[in-house]
Image (tube, rainbow, N blue to C red):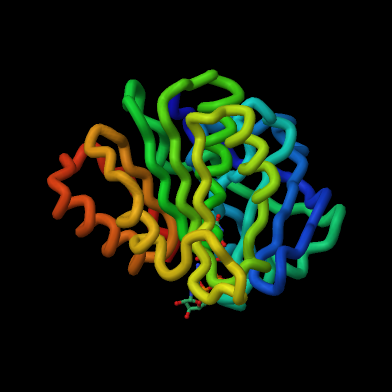
Length: 235
Ligand SMILES: Cc1cc2nc3c(=O)[nH]c(=O)nc-3n(C[C@H](O)[C@H](O)[C@H](O)COP(=O)(O)OP(=O)(O)OC[C@H]3O[C@@H](n4cnc5c(N)ncnc54)[C@H](O)[C@@H]3O)c2cc1C
């Protein structure tokens, strides 16, 4: 059920850099004490005194409401990414949420998720929700494209999930791999094209506009119906 957004105040409780490209943040709710959201939704945070806002997808499982996690790409170095990169533990942030309609459709026989960069955030929430909360047995595949191996996070967790739930597959895709990288390299579209194509699946795309355009045309060429494709563009 999509809930109406509410204004909230939260405080930073943890900030963890991932390589020099991302920061993982955990924000504890203050008022109200819980944020109820659907996997895939985002929050809009006030990132400057004059009221500028930026949107960030919620990365954690929805069954945890007292706090939420974000994965922020710090490379734009604009208002939002600089503010969140420099936020100190204990500092308060005003927000509005949950927002967005990029949520899971019911009754899909399989799901394929394709992310670039911090676009993996809503998919972490969706995967945890499907596998751990719903006990979904529908095949679920996650392709995640980043530039360097050091840009990857959540890898241990995704690998543990794929061991516990063999119908979950995780494919990290590195565009500038170190020598010896044996998994997918190049663009996520290259990796997608090398695996068996499931024309019954729901496809979820999140990240930069270039990837979304490329994957949507790939899926159109495969004859997928429009309602099988869901996407969220970050910029
Ligand atoms: C629904 C939604 C959910 C989002 N979720 C996330 C999320 O989970 N994590 C996250 O990191 N971002 C997310 N974003 C992007 C985020 O809202 C900001 O756009 C981003 O943090 C840049 O804001 P800024 O103020 O730092 O840069 P701005 O001042 O807005 O832009 C600075 C410069 O960076 C370029 N730029 C803008 N955004 C990006 C980007 N994402 N990557 C590279 N260059 C960029 C701009 O073209 C500009 O030149 C989301 C966006 C939307 C619409």
